[in-house]
Image (cartoon, rainbow, N blue to C red; front, side, top):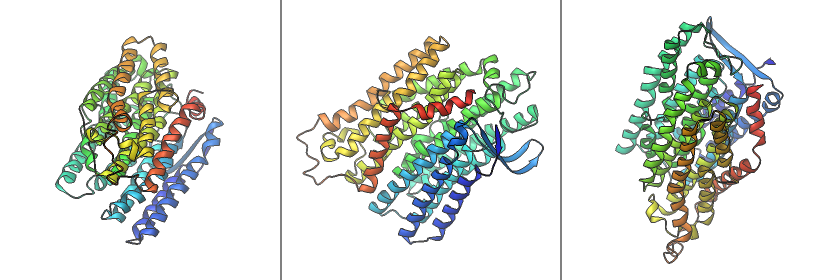
Length: 490
């Protein structure tokens, strides 16, 4: 049942008010941080308030403005949007507390600008999550790109500006060169930019020309470069010049998750399962992202810089989400969407750990982490747990993802995809396991403790430990999100 309500707009308004209050706080550090914490908590509460309605099988819609026939600034909440909304708003709470410890400890400059842009990025994430049309989606997608640029360039040095420039050129270039034409073509062929009410039929007419539908589809995939599908991925490692909390925002909370969410939304709510199957676009997409999964994992093996290795891990892991949806069967779609949640908590843990290691040791190199687990047991323990999730080992969350993806490949009897999933798991072990082994099982005589190294501030350690424990809980009790995803098929 469709319910018309202003509820989808409330989280966006809360974050906008939070952004204004942060910017007005000036150099009053405690007040600025209070607004950040309060805003993140209230945003999550406003999103969580909609959960019972969606679990009952309803959808919430709200139209703010109609620009032209079929073009509206409108919002909708269904299972897919609510999952991304929950993840981005809840992880913002973790990121806010972590930001406080990181920014205070390193005495970073321009903190008001930093917190303001961070909050506006969440505005974009919430807007993308609850968009009811391609018009709304495009608007908020661009907001994320614009306001994360200052975050990537935060250090204002040559390296920072170079990384931010590449980030901006990739994302804005693809959105203007590919995404906007795809939106225009969709309107020409369908007469509307509103998303379909179900994931089966889509909005394209049954007699639509298959060639032009395929061209439009390819433009959409290329236009959502935030998904970091190769070869449109190079902006992501370059953006690692940003402070570690920004890296967490890019990889786990807003930016790349917005990319894969948008691809999932367009595949399911613009084209629909039936059309993608008829034109074989789903399985072609699955093969393309399979290359990204394997190639990015192989590159990750070569990186000694911890954040660089995590960046290529993200490129690989994001494609699991697209792969699952592209299988176009119940298990595959479930596994893909579920990985938005599972990857979010695990990857934010890994980047939080990388930041904590840097704050405590000023070390970025994996080769120098021998014995670090004895000086930073909570940080490296959380890193080990999140690594297991990325690998797909039980009982951590990533295991559930891979279970559904493997079942999805089996349901459509696709052996190449099965081989990709198994090979990628071996590669995951190859680039994650050595980090934990170095930290806990090598270099016992090299005492970081004697050098005065200890855990980072509690405002950083507590969020990363909690995020890692949530990854375990999501692996043991996955039914909440699985049941929510099930509403897409009803």
